[in-house]
Length: 131
Image (tube, rainbow, N blue to C red; front, top):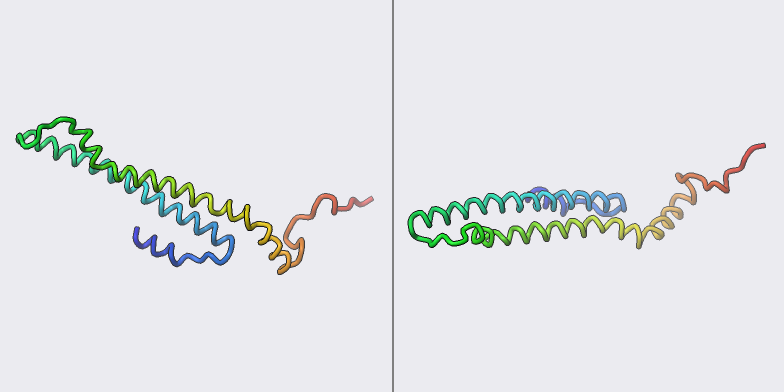
């Protein structure tokens, strides 16, 4: 996971297409973290429950609400997974917001650099019918 986060820092964002790819890659990294936290929570929940069960067996613990106590001990991982889900939703909104707020400026600069209408389909009213 650390390798992917380090790759994310080096990812270029100089062009609009690169911003889109950066957001996709960020979403993948956050998705992997979210699934890791969810899986790790299930694993730790089972271990905590087994620990409390063993303590009750030896008379060290009273054994009341073992499952709820185990769940409470792993609630931080649930919170982290939910926060990562919210972060993924925010990341997925970056490029559409970029297009919404900066799209006209980007199109204008591209038209200035490459010429108006190059690489774009002709508008229907500009097409003339031959007779």
